[in-house]
Image 1 (cartoon, rainbow, N blue to C red):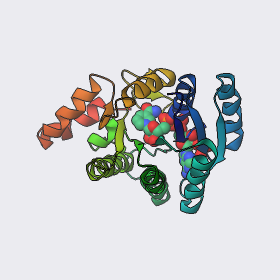
Image 2 (cartoon, helix red, strand yellow):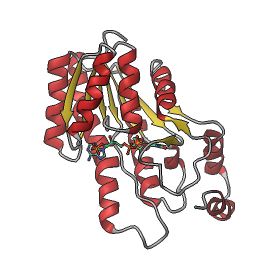
Image 3 (tube, rainbow, N blue to C red):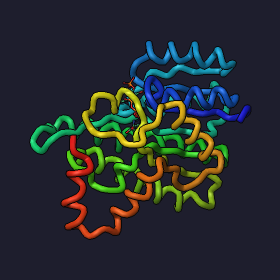
Length: 252
Ligand SMILES: NC(=O)c1ccc[n+]([C@@H]2O[C@H](COP(=O)([O-])OP(=O)(O)OC[C@H]3O[C@@H](n4cnc5c(N)ncnc54)[C@H](OP(=O)(O)O)[C@@H]3O)[C@@H](O)[C@H]2O)c1
């Protein structure tokens, strides 16, 4: 890990923050990106206590030119990018009729376009070096259309499908692609959502698990059992059964 350069979006909070800390403890050099610079600076102090070399990159992943520049700068200043984690994400959930078009646009702009923008701009840099690992943080919510989470589920399904194609395309290029299909993790995104969050993990535990698994560069990192099994089951379940069961299981 000591030679690794890791770029994480959405590093100011939750899973991204915990991933940065976990990578730092394993000796990586870190580029940490998000919109809230003050949070990133606080994180940098923590990372530096773990002796990590850190680059703070205030960034809105909806800005393609800025995303390209941030990735190029990290590659230039820290050394060849090894791992790029497109983790930045937002949520929108609620009963039918409560999600405005602006919420839909926000979720698609960050979770789909922003994540893919990060990966698209990281790819040529990695191709230039002939190595690298592209990672997207999607969700188990992308495996099925969850009640009251239509646009969030759809955004994560889009990202997972994109990552699956990309992995196939890059198989012979020396660049790996992994899709982190996370279950429930306690973060500012989920706290106060009002949804039940069975088997929820704390962010440091999730980060430890993700980084351990990513080391082997798998197609998918998913957690937690039995949510992983349940969401697989939903894919083969008759639609009529799902329609009746899902609102009961995910009731607020
Ligand atoms: N927590 C869960 O249970 C769970 C489960 C499955 C998947 N996930 C996914 O995990 C990822 C991290 O979520 P989290 O739970 O850690 O939530 P969080 O604590 O709210 O963190 C979200 C991060 O995304 C950043 N972000 C949001 N919009 C951005 C933008 N336009 N440009 C750059 N950064 C932006 C935020 O930073 P700024 O506000 O500073 O920009 C923040 O650092 C998300 O993709 C989420 O969908 C979470």
